[in-house]
Length: 370
Image 1 (tube, rainbow, N blue to C red):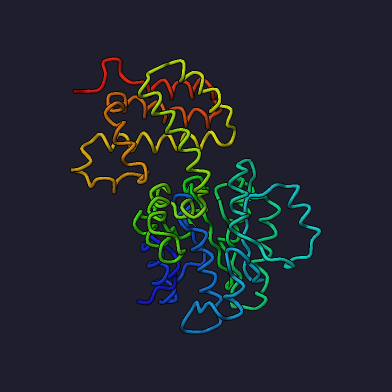
Image 2 (cartoon, one colour):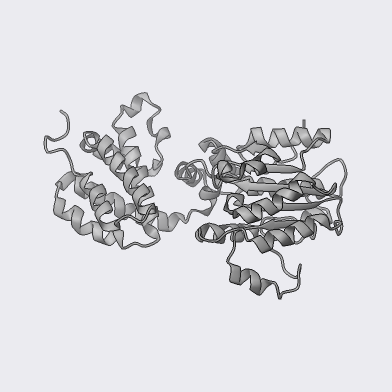
């Protein structure tokens, strides 16, 4: 069976299930796309809109018709598709004065902005607008389609308002909720929607896509794929130059701590890292990948596929040189780092937590195993 979602990477369960439902004419009008962030849920929702509204007939989506050209993640213009994100109330009120449909919406940027602002929510007023949109006759195509991204950020009032439309949807309406927290949706919403699960994307699939479809050199594609954690969005969005610069600083610190074993260095450097503001989360994630790779290097890598299992493939030789020094402290160091990441997200004392992480990297006084 021809896939209707050829551009979606590493989600065969989701795309094959949707293709079967569409081909048989039995697509549920209310869907929940759920799974990790950055794995293509919103991209699949946009692709589904193209399939449903494509004007070419059998070979849908054609990518060439008027409908397909106006349904794009970077420039959404189709009047029968509405995508809702968490947003700031003042920005919503400002937008109320602007004529509808006068500019294309960049869905990727809108999604990224919502992620950067976790206190925003899917507004009740926006949901009211969207319900009215679903009940109007479509302007051009056979359906009106509403996509709610980060739907778990709907307050209860908005979710309950949407529930009434789910219970009695207009015949021409389709609704897709997109979420990384399926169980944060109220149970009555979940019970009225068909769940479509998404998964982390295999590293090889991400690397192949980056090399074949995005014209990225194979070595860089492998590195991006390894660093992505199975999230194709992260692989594409990574500022590799800035990441490499910061990683070099942190690896240099790890090397210094493991070789010199000086607690004073750990305490002194912790202050600078803790002042990193928004970059602190990124620094700790880099440290996590480095520690994980050190653990892999110390576990007889020649018997486990060599550097193919490393995240930081380009650092294999440097990491191998440090692995023995890290081995004795590895379980404690990784546990400290995981606890620090969690505590910092809960607004713990940044400097003390980073100090604890760096002190945990100091070598065992007994020295590496002989």
